[in-house]
Length: 77
Image (cartoon, rainbow, N blue to C red; front, side, top):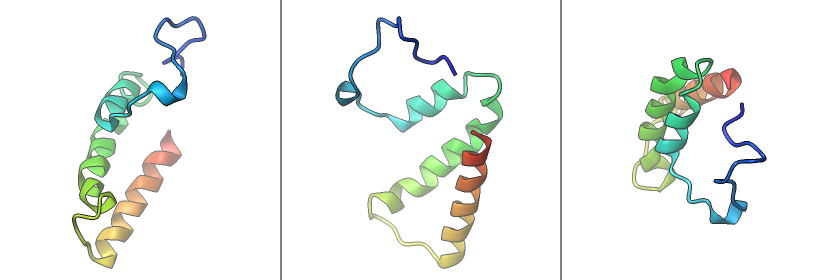
């Protein structure tokens, strides 16, 4: 998608990157073809953050809905 080019001065080895999902979503969604995914991507990020870090439990139906939304968005990416 051209977010990082080989000639980029910002290109650093993978181990130097500190990933901030919020910033990554905003960056990818600046591209016109992904802009429509921004709301869903941030929704997934906020709703699953507590689950991923073990701070919250959810019902089976909630988990299923989040998985469906995640797969839908991943398919569009």
